[in-house]
Image (cartoon, rainbow, N blue to C red; front, top):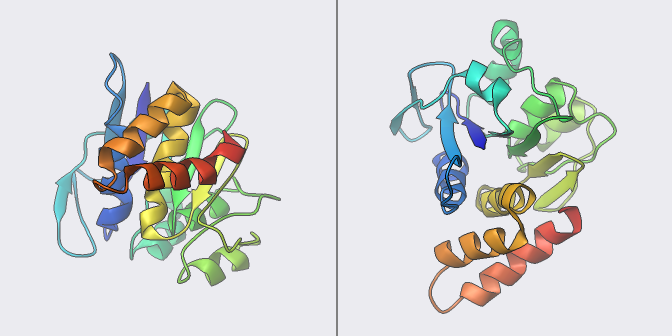
Amino acid sequence: MHIAILTFEGFNELDSLIALGILNRVKRPGWRVSIASPADKVRSMNGVVVEAQASLADARDADAVLVGSGIGTRDVVADAALMSQLGFDPTRQLLGSQCSGTLILARLGLLNDVPACTDLTTRPWVEEAGVAVLNAPFVARGNVATAGGCLASQYLAAWFIARLEGVEAARSAIHYVAPVGEKETYVSRAMANISPFV
């Protein structure tokens, strides 16, 4: 089971790395979570450099793809050569986007007639792409999910785990990362957000 987190130049650390951490709470043979990028190294919006663990070609073949966000997303969608490498298929892959990653799914035509979530900055661009934006942290339809707001990445990660490994695995992953003294509150909120879509 391979989950690829698309991470571009100028990426938001909270989106890619929180999801990476939560998704890696699943410990079973064959479960692999990777940062997938168009270059060997990418620099975050705050100057953190990470090495790619997978290519965009690897992401096309992954079982699930999470499209992260960042300050360069409009440059990504304007780059026809780059966008042509993002051939995803919701009939065989789980797809999710975080904040401005929703613009990428919209431009790929994967959100046609599907309402979506995104961050407040990206909202007008997603609407301009013809997608209705909800005032909600998370929504999914079929195999496609979107999340809005950096800390909604926990919902996206929990949804991926619930769909791929089961609801109890998702509860366990969120419980592990939640603050001490607030674990049940965090788990309840996360599960309330994703349960209608599992």
